[in-house]
Image 1: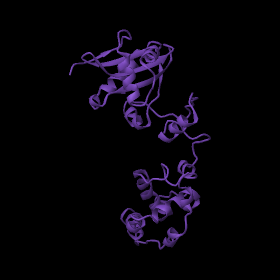
Image 2: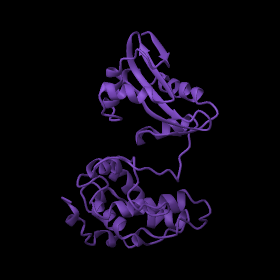
Image 3: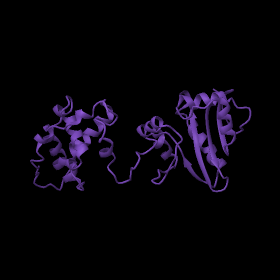
Image 4: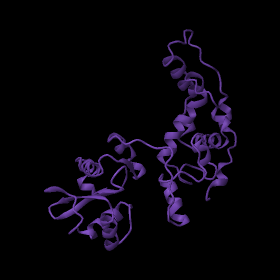
Length: 265
């Protein structure tokens, strides 16, 4: 393996660049268009293994105070070796002194946080895409739902028109959310003082939680007594007299939820 970083935009195998970006779903242009895009960018960097392009990144900038990073991609066999950081470091050096905005895939947000990037609340975007592509961007986390406002309950909104977090099919995300929801009213609300609202105050979330509870593998493995003992006694040393509440009423979890009507939407 002979790794080197190149910032020169000339004599680059832009077909390889196009293939890499297409592979990760970051861009779907042909080689000639990618060449135009990279050559029109303020800063570029390519990672080579010998003569083969295995990674790339670019930034647009006014060269004075503002810059934005795009198209950071590195083939799988070269990940985990700090090469992605080298791509970013090279771009940051080329736009040194600028405020930098980073456009990335939702799955890599935590990686960039480790590099010093911070999330924004006020970023806005207009995308030149059809309804199908915009829906994909919402579902994958690139875009917040239209009309979304910070402070809204995201899950309450998301579950208004679909049975589970990602449609009709149960996923690991539903399992992970369930273990929080099932503890909320009986433990988090009273013990941790997370008492703005009960789970039951969110119609869609409450129905969704009951739907999961009534699904084999969920309710039949949920032990409310053990949950309450753990949080009210084991995690609460100030509970001098080991008081464990009788409620909430567990039978409410077996009431009809009506979520089946959302299947197939």
